[in-house]
Length: 235
Image (cartoon, rainbow, N blue to C red):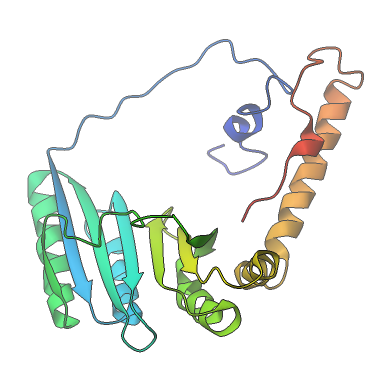
């Protein structure tokens, strides 16, 4: 809701198989295509400088439509490649592009228009690789990657995809010679050290379950609704 009071009705109804209601009418708003789309690819010498450039992009004239950060190399010799998609009117997009290129050069990196190898948003191959996935805040990216090096094993490759202005999706390729369950437990501790995310999910789930029981105590309205007890938390 615009006033930010109460639940998000779209999230409440979507994916519940009609447990809380049936959508009978929907409106679709179409946005015009952007005048121009500019893809910038930057190569930087450290993760710290890449994060500085990401923050600069997020605070720029045009919010990036997409940001992909790829990290490769051994500890102490890692390099970061950044791919940024800017969309909008030609004057604003060009001005934002020039600002990002200038900032990348000030950070000691290289930046140009167009995709470059290593910044395509894909890990080359998952064959024989163990990949840990999760969602974290941008501010915790360095902390989590250092924790992977220390507690799980030297990671070979990391792919970070912009999921929002405060958070990102992360995929980390880790050594596959260790015990998978132990690695996953350590990974969960790195993503959610205080357990706050899981607790928030469980509180929301209990609220939804209570609402469902009050609305349809005998499951008469929709007996085939997806059982809420099957929902599982994903980091």
